[in-house]
Image 1 (cartoon, rainbow, N blue to C red):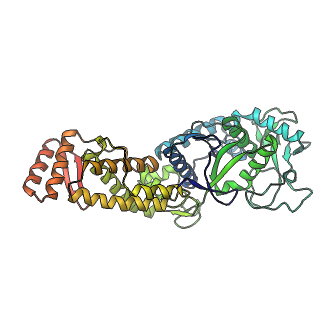
Image 2 (cartoon, rainbow, N blue to C red):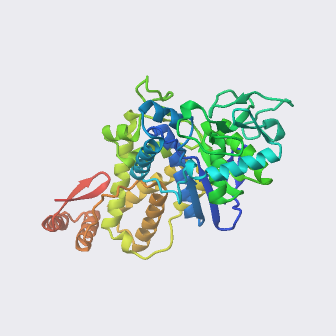
Length: 462
């Protein structure tokens, strides 16, 4: 089965076909760096990481751009409220964000362009939109996009223009009404903007939020690229406006596939500070979470369905991660990683089909864990062949490349200890308890403790 992705624009699954064979240009909406990102934000970033990892696995060279919004209503207000220079504020929260990405084992983007680094491109795009009659200037130096000049406005969110001759102008970056508005491309300078001001042909001011992403994506990936991602909260007004202004400015296609992840619920409801269920990565660290268990909670549900994150699920997710890591350790102790083999078990076919079906992670995980359960029984009770070990290691490696559930602090067993552990597994399978005990003692003398559990042998450093 070839890769199928649900395109928010067409509202159906489509076979993925890149613009350039073997290459993918992917733009993901990054954080607005005025505060810490929360677990709901990271649900989207985790989905994008999964998509990128799978694209890489099936052979694509992915160029991934994630923007940093360092100039907008929120960043200006926060810097003013805190009495801190805007750049100092946004530099600080950008650093925190990158640290959080690293802790969660999210692969870094190829570039993290900042909005303030693309002001010239924004001004150039606005000039073109004015010249083409898609935008107009106001006396205060603001410039607005005229939505009724773009007949396809509303296609992404299924809104109707209703043949309006004029629309209400709106100057704020975000709004909730699902109706078309002429939105700000450029905001004339106001006293509360402070030093956040640039010169433009129509007057001093700063860019609107939507034009920022159009400029940054164009500069990094060109006017037409493959995939644009974000959360469902980005669809309107941000992505609808971004799409309209980009097509009108560039006279051509903009994005081939729009992908959006659903909202994350916390404890079954909406996340809110007043409900005390608002979690940043630092909050989760204080609760004792490890990155792998967080990754599991965020990836175990399909990206287009609402899922619920909960502190109560911590033990459940950690138990599963522990079993997975024990299985990985068992393969290592049997020298599976040292076997040269390029084949995979039959279960990989079903795993791959699930992932190619719009990243169906619930099914893919079910396939893998069912296979893992059977393999653990085989490792515990029979003389597994080198061929089977090689296939198992290949599947385990691919699985971890995609989901990154294996803890990176696992100790590598020395070759002589691996050999003893493997001999003991065989002895136990043959019910040779005398030899099994003798091997346990030899392993102990080498500085390692071996324990027998329902999931097989566990080896720990003394």
